[in-house]
Each structure stands twice: as structure tokens, then as C-alpha cells.
View (cartoon, rainbow, N blue to C red):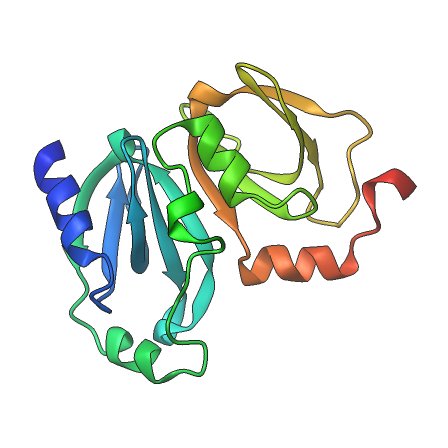
Length: 186
């Protein structure tokens, strides 16, 4: 699918109450489902859904990594609109959300004490999960947490240009936050 067609389809889905399925170049077999909340020059933000149309946090994709956007034709769009959590809202007012720059997306989407899951381009390690400690001009500094809810002793520093996916507020991240100690007590 061509980039301009991808952008047009994402823009058309904003506020429509219809789920889209997003495919990425880096994960040919994976489809991400959600409601499009906003589209910027570099990033698109979805209210992600799980099976049955239930909310599962927010997910931002780098536009250049998206290879296809399809309308979801299942029952899940209708079911999601019937749930008490409808309508899906952006975590911050849309006029303050910056999806044009990677740094701006991180600053406006990720709350300081909120766990975030990040995928990097061309890294096979999967998700990096942790707290965003700070942003330097070109790097994200993340204090990572393991699946057993233990904190790494040292922070990791990664180039912002390598970010491909940023997730916040998912059920997984919320559950991990519930059981994890604060990183200062690790």
C-alpha cells in the first residue's frame, strides 16, 4: 500500500468509530487493531483494542513503518461502542499531542511515572518496558523493568530515531505497574 493511501485511510478513520487493522513492515504476521485517534507527520496514535473490542491502552506507530491499513469488518467495532469505556479518548487533549516529532510524541503521550513499552527498528529483542527517565537531544533514557517486575540496575540509552512503536496504558503494563516496586527501591 502506498504511503499517501495509508495516510488518507488513517485520516478518514479519525472519529469514525470503526476499527482499523494496521500491519507493519517489521512484523509481517502481526496486526494491530484499534481506533485512530490522531495522525501527525511522523506518528499515528490508536486506541488499541483487544479481543472483543475491549480497550487495551494506546499505541503510537511511526508512519513510515506501516505497510497496510485495513478496515475491520468484524463485530468488534459495534461491540466496542457498547462498552462503558466508549468513546476511546486520547490520553491528553488532541490539540496538545505532538505526533509530528518523536521527541514531542514522547513528551506529550508518556506521563512521567507511567510504564511505557517500546519497540525499536531492526532490533529482534522485542519490547523494552520501563519508565522514561529523560530525553536528551537525540536519545531516550529508559529504566527497564523485567517480566518478573524487577528493575534493571542501570538505565538504557537508545536513539529516538530508532523508535518504531510506543505503547502506554495496556492491560499488561497496568498489571506490571501494580506489582512492581518503585525503581528507587529496586
